[in-house]
Length: 583
Figure: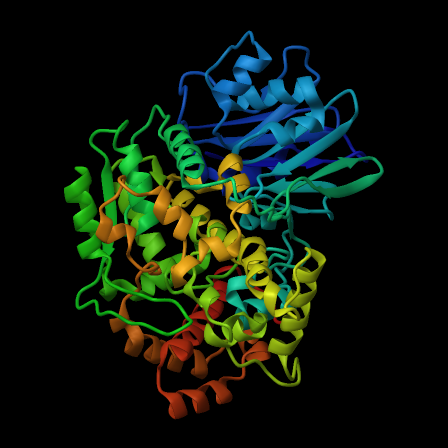
């Protein structure tokens, strides 16, 4: 896992871009504490910061082909590295999968993309074509953003691209509004900063003297196949998990005691001993349930059961609520797409603990719920009527009416159009689960993966996501919603695939979100008072603080209002930290 950055310009010598690229590289140092490299081409400068997970002695980047034609900067892990190496034949100078990607591109060009199974974001400069190619994995596990106002500049994080411009930082108001109103669907198509664009998941682009052209290489496209069963899914998952355990650095697992993380831990434990299993804990954690929203429960008993049954090295991570100002500042700066969920506090604390315990990689169960019909609101006919129903249940921040009198309606229309463009319609009751899942996979999931990457990589810890493997995704698309939700149970096929691998109490456990500290409500309200007293101009422009006060007096600090208050607090701190100019 690494940080990558670069600038392509055809209007000036490459050397003129070296110092700006070095600034971006320094801004990404946390992503690669084990090394750094920079290389110039005829019209580009590429930089890399390295987290050495494999072949620490070799594998330095940027990496150039033997004939000097191609130069690569790469961030990710290939799950099919041995198979590709066998097909390509070598000779090989390193054990790094970056060399495999470079050789694949040399052999097949852009055709190599469809052969790559894993999580990745990379850029290849082709000296002969005088063109560059940026690629991002199907689900967007690995981040990649770019801007077009400094030639073509790209980086793993938006904060690196901000170093290119000494002028004031301007927020993309529409993107921030989307975050405030519909956090689950935000930050995927647009960044929170004007002029900075994410390369969408499952896309690649070409940049040359004629401009920038984006193209898709993967889309979530369900193709139900009754012949695909739990056995085939199980085999693919075990292979993906095995590949995620290959490293020359210490690995652990984030254990929630849920089906997905326990399944990952159960297989990984066969290859890794001891296997540290980290679980977040809170004093006085209580169970909370919201019908058709998200269940939140104390993970500790289930994580302890998993550790006991699977012989994991259980490591509890207590959340220190006395440092809430530190945590709020930390997540607001780390997640430059703005924190979407309060659970990001838990993600950040877990990642910090993993790094403190000497771990360089963490296996996670992310992407299972979204691709295997794991959310129980899919069983609710009301919740699946359209995006508006989900947005309303997750707590929208009231925004100023003069900006948008009904932002939920506008976003509902936009998201409906996205689903219909992908072939699923909310207008047909028979397609509503498929349409909802289309949005969950294309918008909700990339947001979750983005958060996981940034919080882990802030501490030089690589999250590894076996459920994002290409073969696993192919099989997930072959499972019809009716099969996945058979008997009114989410993830039915995946639960069957896990039979015999995880304790039955965990295999039957209902989906539960990453926990949050229920005792922080009053602390949030106290900090909201400070925002009211001196709101950042961005907050004053976008947020209807009077209406938020009215809602709090009427409803109290219920889960929806609490989620809204959290995002307002983060917006204030994000705008201050990044010195965002007044709109």
